[in-house]
Each structure stands twice: as structure tokens, then as C-alpha cells.
Image (tube, rainbow, N blue to C red):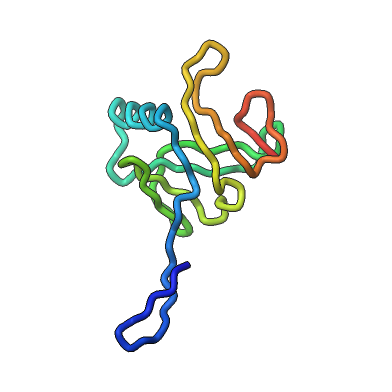
Length: 125
């Protein structure tokens, strides 16, 4: 939060939404390619989140969706990203990459909040 002094010298609290998500260059390029090659409407944004399930407890959500009540919006290199406020607890500081190697192809999540991950890398605890 930032404190901001108004013209009457009273202190107001201004909330600043710091981006909790990092997209690597590979992820940015792949997301932009997906947007360009599919029929994603202008009111849909990249949703990043979590849901219960997966072999380690939670699974990642990475999809295109409309903004809902309780979502924060961020912009990363021209990509509008939405995330439910409650998911910040699990995803703050996450880095999402896209890899095209022989051993690993697809989106890869580097989550500093995960105490354990599964072998496939799509769920965490």
C-alpha cells in the first residue's frame, strides 16, 4: 500500500496491485500465438489460478475466461491476466514458462509456495 497526501494534507490509503505473476519470454510468445490462432473474444483474458485435485493436492488453472467478481487484473507484456484474489496465497511469486524440449513440452510452473510437486509438474501441495 502507498500513503498519498491529498491537497488538504490528510493521508489517504491507495492500494497498489503489484503483479504476483511472472511470464517468461517463452510463455509470452506461446500465449500470444494461442490468442492469434484461436477465436478468443475481446472480453476474455488469461486466467491463472488453482483448483483442488491433482496428485499433489492442487492443480494449476491456465485458460481464457471472462473477468469475474473477486478477480484482480494484471497486464504482462500486453497480455491481460486475471486471477481470483484468494489464489494469490498459492500463486504469489509464480513464474510460468513454456518449453519445447524433448523432455518437457508445454507450460511449466515454478511456484515458490509449493512444498511438494508431482512428477508431471501440473499439481502441487
